[in-house]
Length: 145
Ligand code: TYD
Image (cartoon, helix red, strand yellow):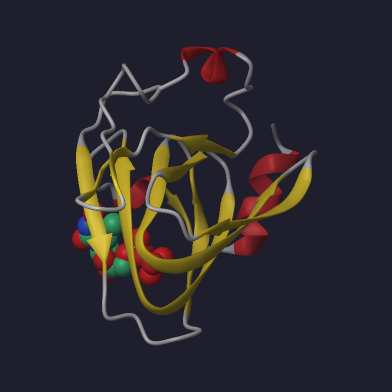
């Protein structure tokens, strides 16, 4: 992993992280993400989603403090993000060696293209009170910053 990549990025914005793909077409590949080495936080939780029907859109929330890195380890997902001040962005994840860093206070909608498998590395345990689930509350929270 190129450490300069982190240093050149502001962690207040979502950004793609290219990880090494170790292997070859002949035998396949391994990609590794190590907390505080390849990624900018300690990993406290891992979750994955699967069997999501084609074109389903999930997400529709932000987190107050949580940092995440999301991969599509199989298939394709599109993540649309919004940050107050810098606006909206769209990221296509269709390469298992590329992750998307999502900083706190990022509204996201995630579109799944069957049979996508999303893998998430998260900086904290599941806490429902870390969620902002209402878009109005998200806008309000940003305006009050
Ligand atoms: P949620 O984060 O709302 O996912 P999405 O926005 O994609 O629908 O989670 C869906 C449900 O799963 C919700 O009831 C909370 C539960 N959940 C946990 O219990 N633990 C977890 O770590 C996560 C990510 C979700």
